[in-house]
Image (cartoon, rainbow, N blue to C red; front, side, top):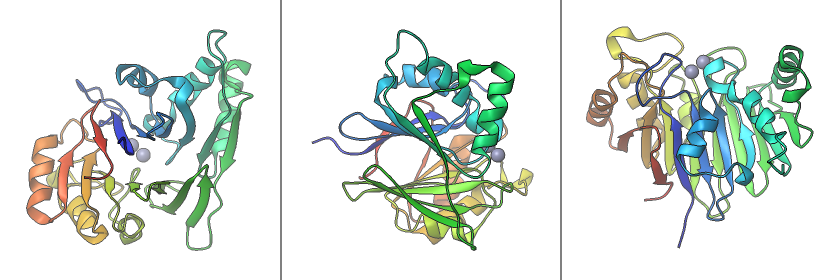
Length: 258
Ligand SMILES: [Zn+2]
Ligand SMILES: [Zn+2]
């Protein structure tokens, strides 16, 4: 029987690196329908590489509006307007700023990036920077990460009871680990080596702390800058926590549940 799966579309950063594209993750249902978490440049190409049909896309969920996480939104809108494509309605969900970003794109590129079959929705947050909403049969939760003013981490509780969490870009924040509490699969950024740690991102020591605190079953490290060797990241994090630790690769496909 098929189960929920994740395909990594891009495990890298904005800096060019062989085989490591910008952020994008497809959460795939047994029916082949999928939700895209982030849509960085190259995500559309990576969908093709992974054999995913654009017609099965149901929603895009965005973490923040740094270009490495959202630029292919405009390519997506243009693709969905192509006469060869029959668009079904989709929802694009993101933090505050989504409407501004899409309006700005239309100013830059014209009406070609306005998709009449996409519903844009900015998620509401409470006073503590947390939000909850439904996307079809999925329950989504999010929390501000502090990486930049709008950045969110997301969690999806799936119809079959499995769960997925995605840190987006984040500094070491307990609330992000708490969002991923007990998740079957937690995609957690691990941008830089410890000796080059950056304020708004994680490195192996802080990513391990996030994994430990979350108690997730599988910790999938990702968002590697060129200075971060994925295998070194995996080995260092695995020394510090008891979760099953893996390093993401573009094109990797794995079940949420093991
Ligand atoms: Zn960012
Ligand atoms: Zn990023």
